[in-house]
Length: 454
Image (cartoon, rainbow, N blue to C red; front, side):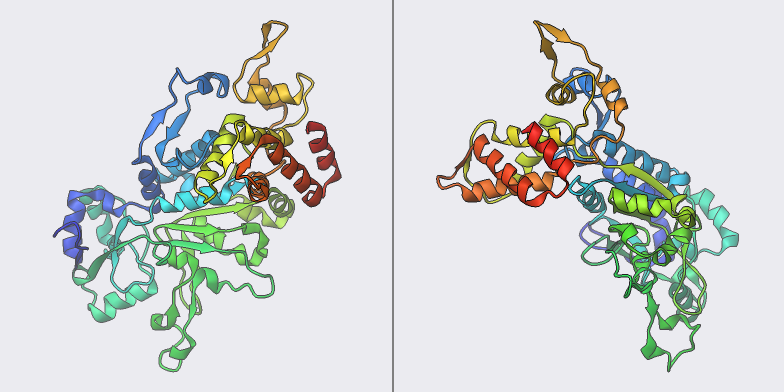
């Protein structure tokens, strides 16, 4: 079979494939972790001044998959990868939701989208005509699984979906060795193994978005407990063996989120109508902002879900040089062709970073920004030693408030559009920023802080 041809064979032929490559039957966390790691991992070089000045000489891993898209987010990415590594080893993380929590415009959605793309296009094998595209090894009776696990050097989890079980018993007469296995690829657009759930309106939210529904048109023909009436097109059905993304997760009513409880710890989700629960193997990624998290956390009745969440803070970037790279990346991808004068992007970056910093008695904000950027502060001809670690310990939630990257980009866009001579300067960007702050920022305390910094 050539590489361009997709596999189409019976279960026994699938077992032959597995013998040569047991990784074919990877569970969801391991597949995602490996897909990201396969792009390459390297440790930050000792010669890199950022390692010494920003990370206090700690060993920081750099995952090449994120290199060209995300800047100054090494700590966040490392925490995400620790979660995936624990999940890949079947640790407690494999039964937890990964929640990215941070302010608007900090990169939560972009990071989630990039993580989803890691498996988009990757091949996987499943039972033909199974709406859940379940792992073919689930066809094996439980009495035989231990022997097959030893032979194939892989673990067999879960059960067939009701539809796949019906196919096995009715179409193949229970002969699992004859069941047809096909190869597909993960696809977000094709809703194969990657699903996204936007926040639902409280009045119209329907759990069928998560678990599917019953096809009412078939109830005349089949009984309610017949698997043929099931329409397994919910997010947890589609995202089986891959990823389910919950967008702005806590904007939903708590009843809508109850499915998460069993989907994580038990790896099973309810089936529509009068059917048993359905096995689910997938990485659940969620994101929200801080106010939603605090509101949800304050309700003691939500403890069951909170206990199933691994929360990772995604703050704004506080490193000036890395903030600049973000704007340069976005501008390079736009169709603007105006000349940008030297220091223009740096001035805009200084504006955003200083809005995010918290005051300290150890130094002024400008000095603090320089220290966070890894610069040495010279005072009266000598280097002034201020420990960056002490500054970060002083305000652990620093970076969770301030001007967003999106706000700055809009100001740069306005400056570009207002320019008559296809050239923007630091003064032009500052005028645009000042105008936007006056027009759009409501919090008086924040406006005063920006005014002082300006």
